[in-house]
Image (cartoon, rainbow over all chains, first blue to last red):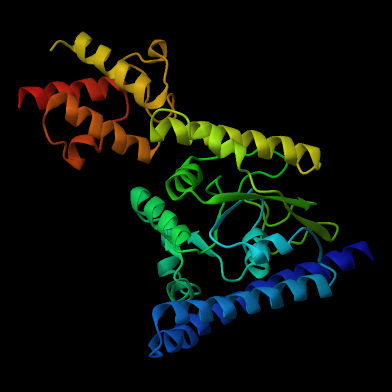
Length: 260
Length: 81
């Protein structure tokens, strides 16, 4: 019986990936170019594209929850929907992170790795949504800061890539540079996934032994850590202090919630 | 400027810009692996070295730099040029 459950959930996982691939390919090739060709201002096209992405991600989550593959627990997720011009930072244990977070704040911008600009599933979507490419290290920081100054909310995973669940995260300094350069408020989001699934080390088509519980815990704005870091002498040192403070916050809170 | 003098200047730059203790900086030290510099820091460092040498640094001058000794050698070459 237990094996049958796992087989079912693995099947759901495969179907979700197939839906993502087919849906992404069609949207990249047809829907998104259509949205971009409308005679409306670029911002409006971006807003519509992000609406479509949010809708698809909510559908994907509904399939995962409805099939019994995933249990979704959110705390204070309303803060994400209300955030404007805010830098949302989260740890990054699984593929699901971006799907769940974007479904909770569909109009947010995010950094997408440059390779996905040439990926057959994503190329049209990332362009139409006006997401930020990480092609150049200096360019991406400025583009992020500019998006925040324009009032967009931006989602960043300071680890830069998915990391081993259960381990204390190790942050790169890009997110801190963005926060300091833009002056945006920082909203920390803790993500927990138990049992771990869709990690760097697990096969994507095999569901975990038990249905997984995915927790999204939206914290309070981190004002003081930024003020303290902003006292240091040079931008590089300020970014180091802020990164350390953020990393301490996440290590402490992830342990406190039992996510790491 | 001798290699030792360049190294001393580099230690000062690394300390003032990145709070890196001078004792951690030896010719064998790897900038990215040991001192945890990133690509944004590399741009900052290049600007500081431009000030030190008074020469414009081209990206290709900096492309293959990994260790402190590489930086010292690059600065020496720039100053001789």
